[in-house]
Image (cartoon, rainbow over all chains, first blue to last red; front, side):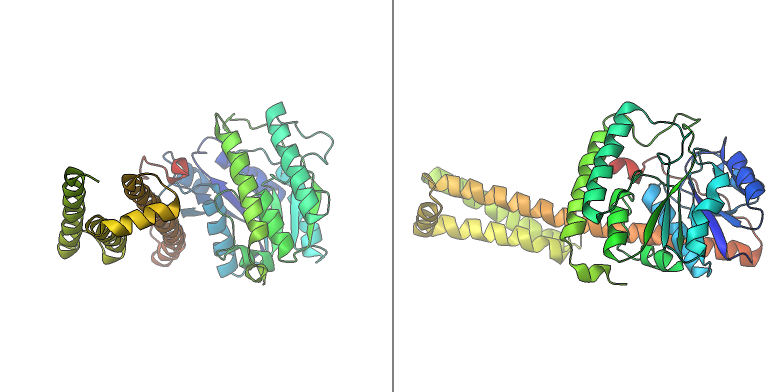
Length: 237
Length: 132
């Protein structure tokens, strides 16, 4: 058994998920792929299974954060040492998995996060999206005292210590991105950004649409403030 | 406070009190949620019967009319009730999350050990993520 697992949260991705899994397996043939089907109403689970992935099924649509945490719990229980998290919509280029894993495997860092802004030919998100990312970039950079260019990136790799930490109630499962980094930093994990290539979302679907971005920004800001106000004992590993 | 106002307020409070007790008796309302209802209706009844206490309380909070104090009390009660529900819903959401995750993991183990592939769950149309 490989010591590494790649987890893909998926909700209604039947069209693209098979190809994403095949691409990942082609670039990383010896790594196990896990798809967590978040209560899809289409045939995502069958498509993932046919492409050779392990599939876990949620009974209901629980949202992105809960879905990735299910993956962390699985990986931790099964004894994997390293975990890579990648989106199921083909936005993240799977040939960068090795780059993300390298510093984690070497023991240089506990948590590696892929940044589209550090790679020269990644796509540039829309203006409003960039504005949101810029806001959180500044906020996170000020709080953790180190430059983080892409705090909302879902392309990540980390070790077993982080898996264990994220399997507990401390994991901010409603919107786990910028405040997740702050939580990790408070807990003393070593974080590093790695340049990765990201493509524009081929399906055009996004969780940030309509009035949601504003709500997301307010909620995330609140979440970050509360994270900072929490008793530091909670972050002890 | 006119006698009409007093009778009306007492009537409402007594009805709420009896209804709450009845719901708890029939097991349709849990004791933990009934306490706030019972406390509020009891406080209303006491304040109406002991009018001098209501006047003192009105003076204490700086209100002009005693009825304002009663209304303020009702609003405060509703706010507390909402907070109580929000806390409970947050806890329930956490529990549902843990159950769904546990179920996904156990189901995988079950399917693997029995070599069966269970039917992919048919999710509800109501998405919890939409509510958030």
